[in-house]
Length: 143
Image (cartoon, rainbow, N blue to C red; front, side):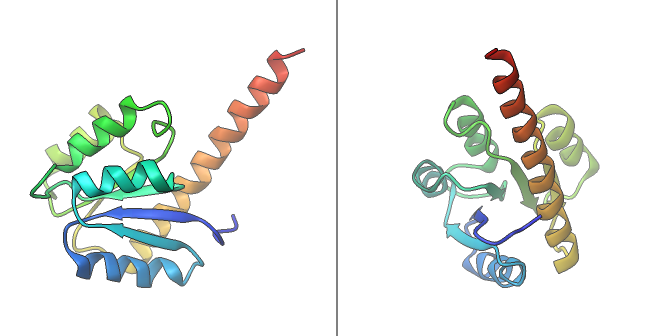
């Protein structure tokens, strides 16, 4: 999959983490924007309409779950895949994220560059395939 021109938004209140993720993903040709907190992040998602959102859970103004719920409730944003990137490493948190909330992936901090790159690539590839299936379904039903 060609990652050039892929736009990723990282909603995270620590600028150093945004810079780190930008450094890791830029090696794949991915453009990373950052938003410092949940409220700002939601505004940027609405404006930018990124291909993927990386989302921290623990932020002071609006936590990641609130951002996620608002994204999924908005028809213009609900199709955007979300990878949670958090320090909440307990297995119950991961189960809640992946199986209850249905996020696309769940990465715990600290993470390695290959773990992040691999997750982003997997989620984008899976999302592209599902979007293609939806488009083919729409084309096929119009006959």
